[in-house]
Length: 295
Ligand SMILES: C[S@@+](CC[C@H](N)C(=O)[O-])C[C@H]1O[C@@H](n2cnc3c(N)ncnc32)[C@H](O)[C@@H]1O
Image 1 (spheres, rainbow, N blue to C red):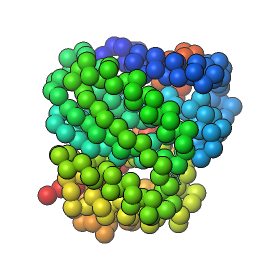
Image 2: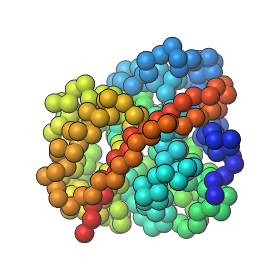
Image 3: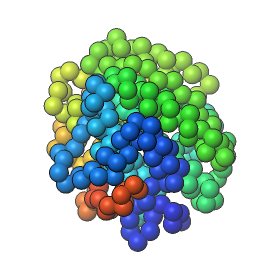
């Protein structure tokens, strides 16, 4: 039930569509060789940042780590994430959905989600019903937003082949600032035709866990703004102490809104993925929380 193109011998392989747009962008940025040469064992792991250099470093070192983590959740090769994985596939299965991708970085997570759903549609493992996805993406790195916007233009035609139609707006957003958060929420919620408002926050715990007080107000505000809508908030983080701290905060804040159920999964043994540009075998892990509004 899983395409061999992305899962073979108990290892994840990246979709060719994602690999090819990433390779092209790496060449444009003049960093392809650095991506190929990067040795994960010698790095603590970049988390990105506002500057161009921090953003490019994260792009070189961590793009496919984020992508592989989301890929594991979407394709769920061991069938251990049934409820969460099926819920994601149902939300992105048909109709109109509005997605808020924050902080979006250079797009590894959302591109992985979309490219892996595409892969399953191509192999007739998911229905090819039309789905219109309106993406609002925010980050405080201008460089990340530029790369993200370019990726979206490049991936669009591949997605349209299987009836996935996307439009996207990128916005400067500072998560420490509630009025900046208010602006991006207004843009996201403007899409009145949406059947579901889907907030996707991936790989943010490394930043938030070390500065909890700076983020509390914005996160609480985001939760409040969607608490009366058909909505969900999906968090996919690496398994780490930072994720534990981040989730502790999220759970404390979401308690104000009684209308959410919380699904969660954590990898115990982790998974293996193959880097598509240097064929290295790398270990990954995940810690997921899906806040789903009911009623
Ligand atoms: C580890 S990356 C994750 C990006 C993306 N979600 C992914 O999975 O690849 C973290 C991102 O958070 C952004 N970021 C950090 N602090 C931020 C803040 N205060 N406001 C907005 N974005 C921020 C960084 O620019 C970076 O792009």
